[in-house]
Image (tube, rainbow, N blue to C red):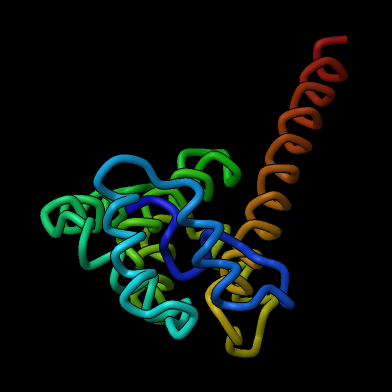
Amino acid sequence: MVGIGDHVPRFYLETVDHQKITWIGTLLTNMALVWHLHCYRELPGNDTWTNYAAAIRAEYQNEWEVADTQLKLGQLRYQGSIRAYLTEFRALNNFARATGEVLKEKEDLAMTSEILRMRFMHYLEEFADNEGFLQATNLVGLQVERMKALEKVREGVSVKILSH
């Protein structure tokens, strides 16, 4: 089920569980809405967001789709744009739900040696959470891309100087 992952949807810190559950209910239609209303009648006001998210995932998540998405996530590779890579990584990970060391391994295998070296040089401590790790990779990837663009410009300038 798209949107019921560990990080999505995002709520304000002060949002309480019943508000989250009610909001998700407003997005549902057809049989999913019937399921939601049944759950609401069974546990009115007593359900937690964690329990609700797990229940809706268990009810509607296709395990074959999750396995397929985990495979795609493992095959995903950085192709020169960190923004494009992370957008696809996050989209796939909504289903695959990789976290911790598994998430780090999948991303490390997808990155270039330049990005890995720079990240290891600039971030010496362990990351507190998945988002910090993804943000660090994003920042380092952007720097590597800027450096490569600058190198191309410098090469063009050198060629012009030598040809004159």
